[in-house]
Length: 458
Ligand SMILES: [Zn+2]
Image (cartoon, protein in one colour):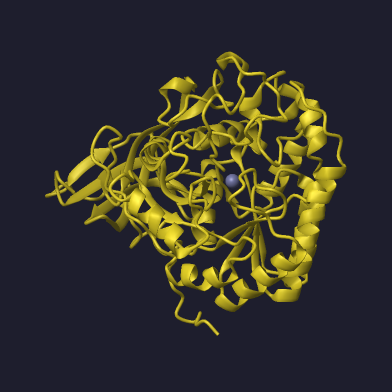
């Protein structure tokens, strides 16, 4: 820390693992050294930052971010994505293995990512690997090199260099990951159900929604759970959009299958009914569904059925989104499917959570502690707790602001939240005890999956 080696951060609303209370947090050498009752830590030698009634949260951990660099840096990049993350209170991201070129499906692909990210990360970051057809032999070297697990698609991914797994390929990939003790993270939509759905291009969101029915998610999840049961792999269902998959997950867990799931801010805060004609900024796969489904996702979230709420930040250039306001056709079928929201996840979820009577501590559980646990970083990230990295966020839970896409740090000024008023503003972000300045020097570090001593490769 440049100003002093220690700092006391004081707030009447510190969100701790067991709930919110007034406290003093003593930070030394990048770690949380002590948590004491509010106003009790003496200032002797420490710099004191009194946040008053502004809340102090652990930095968010976003395990689902598509940085796209190298290869599609015009869509997003390490510098822009990590500045957006820091400005949005996210202090750790884990980068998805696709949309960059090369994808992270080989050790060389991982090395290319690491080299490119060097010196341009404003937050800490790690990497997922990818399990695709024909890279079974690459999984062990990637696992040993510290990727947090492996992503696979059960339907076409949207980019040619990252093909999806058919049944036999899925089985083989899960068996190998079970052997390695790796976490398999899965985009679950079923290609046969998608192929049988009506495909009506155009500007009407209801036609796009009909082309990606909830049945595609349930069919794929059912297939995944069968394969997980047979292979013993640990599986995580990415971006659950349809609440209809939840009973399948419950039954599988009851049978002893190790399965977790995540959902995303856009499924929790947006709804099909409000998406305008040509509103391709809202296009993602699986799609944002109706309000009744959104209510069901909130019920499941409150009941603890989701381990994490993560952004699935997946931007592209405005021309590929075919945005009418940029001269595009607004055709949902042809537009790039991906939502840009990394900087806005916390206020978006908090705005809706508060309306539904949920607490800030719950939001922290979903967006910080939960994802940290998912990737095994919970001994170090995801909590205001002694011994943890001092990744902290000063968050004003009562401040309203209007979203202007051009003011976000994302590389391209596109987001479905543009024009909306959100509640909750990030005032300061600390990474390992240092304030992150998006206009200053980056000091994020690259993280690897913590190795578990009991997890020896068989
Ligand atoms: Zn994604």
